[in-house]
Figure 1: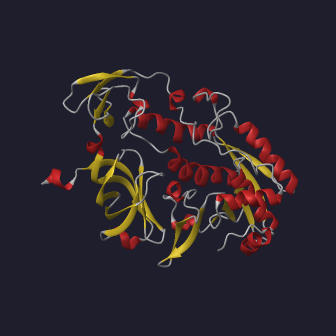
Figure 2: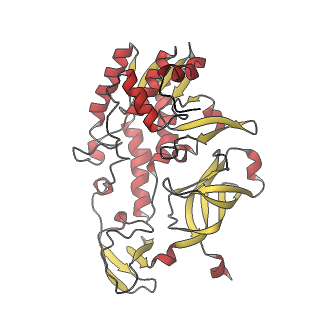
Figure 3: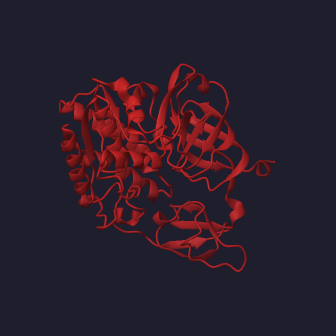
Length: 381
């Protein structure tokens, strides 16, 4: 599809939903508000719904930080209601604070205390936004045929099975965060923005006269200020691979595999990077950059969306974090575990993050939670 900011072409693509009732997840940002407005103007019966998750008693985010989890949600809800009122459509805020604390915040804190680097967005999307929130909405007699969001991703068939496919805007593609959504779930979802770039969406927002058109992007989760979620952090030793003490750390929650900035230990030779975290000893292990490369990874909680892929090794392009350039690899699934062997070593594979599998055309094949990096081939010889 060509980059055409003309509103009518965007509406034409969504008129297949005319007369359908579609709940649209609203965050107060430009993407979800454009998705809502396009679907409404294309003839769908839309309902705006937002997920209330912020509980200051569970960790207070300082004012001024525009994050997914934070006090700014009240202002976002007011903006969402304003947009829905202008369109003449209903708007509901679904209180998910208790479930969010149990499912996301407690998980996030427990993972960090174990020296891992969790991805709360992956878990939140499956278990909260596309899970508990929709169940709670239906329990409140909010009924709908489809659920839509402003994610930059597409739904298309592959080998007769519905798959997510990367959005055409490589800089905004969000399929990585949604890799655990099953084909049967995709059948009830709508992603109106997957065929557009962010620039196009902002142009549509201006053409639609939306107050979110020039709203700044929100920061993920708590704006990177993870310490607010912890009552206290315990300082400990930074050591080399032989256990020699090199300095002190301020708490293991502040570090992740591959980190250099903020390490605070000087070196007369190569700079130090975080190689490993040992929660049982409250230690952060430092080494040089060359030691950060792994030949593969072992993963748990593996999913593949085509059953054929569960029975034989398959080739894939694998992302080990959202900002990672996909790397070619061979993936083997066994029950709910995955073994990934890369063609070329990959840097800073972090336990707790997700490894997500794609084919060459950008179809999402599945993924897993990273448990550990695997040694380079020469280390096994």
